[in-house]
Length: 463
Image (cartoon, rainbow, N blue to C red; front, side, top):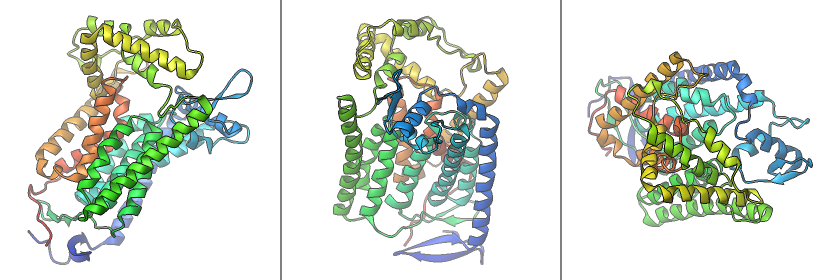
């Protein structure tokens, strides 16, 4: 292993493993504080410039939050001014927004903006720390910069939707995985010899760490039920990382699993009590499945030809679908209505299985398509800039992983790969569009950054 220049590094003993760090903690803190301030300025300026867009409520999160704050019921206000309980949306985001509802019962967009900016900066800082612990400080700064300026995350922070909080939560889970659940040091050397860094070893407290990890995973599921698939992929993997004692590893798996089951169980019990049905996720799944699997959408795929100019891609016109959906036989409550939507979607799938298979490919492609669809409110310049940036990000992420594939064959990478698999699998069946890949963007940024910084292919194991 090549040693650093004299005076630049010092050896620290953490547990029974040696590790190497830079000897200027004050300078690091100065850079970190400066970076946080810059992140606040970038995120804050974008949100303030688009503050009016936070007045809209396309997914009813605002109205649910206001109802919850006024009545104490997670529901919607009916014509009788009595709150009707609902499970139409997952509970975490509206519950969090309800704390910012004023005495008049309205949610000011300024408070939403502040929340989104703080969540965005938290995402940036945790991405930086994950990359620092796992790779190096140079990788950390590049990854943090990419997350700061990412157009997808900036755009979503100007909307009252769950992408911003979902991204923050997934990075929190990944950070806790790297920092606490699998803090195995691995001393490495960069090709230019400027830095020798390692993952930090934290004190051994596996059960407490498991409790926190289970809580974070549970929050992701309460934010988006899709993340239950991600959790199911992460929990068994806990047995293969962390403490050398198998009993402790097994205990961690059990604790995390129990916390997740208890959290989902409490939400389910609430829905049994309020709605009379054991809804573990939302009463919106049927609509989402039907939106992705209906005759109008299938017909559009059957008639459309391959567009060789990705910046000219036009979205599907759902006018016909909405007309049919409004004319459907409605259920007597939101649960039965959701069941009707599920049955309509399953009928379409069973009647046209070949188109269902093709539509799964189309939805997966839509999820990862770098160019936004061309709509009347988007100029060609916006489509080109975002599309070219996202194309570069995706390609460089793939190249970064391929370049250091041995180092990516590491437990710290599993949450990232599992999230990619989860989003692709779920949204190839349910409705998808590019914004739904937002939670994985910080992980892509780390992959891009590690490809931009030279690093030896082989790690030097600590003695």
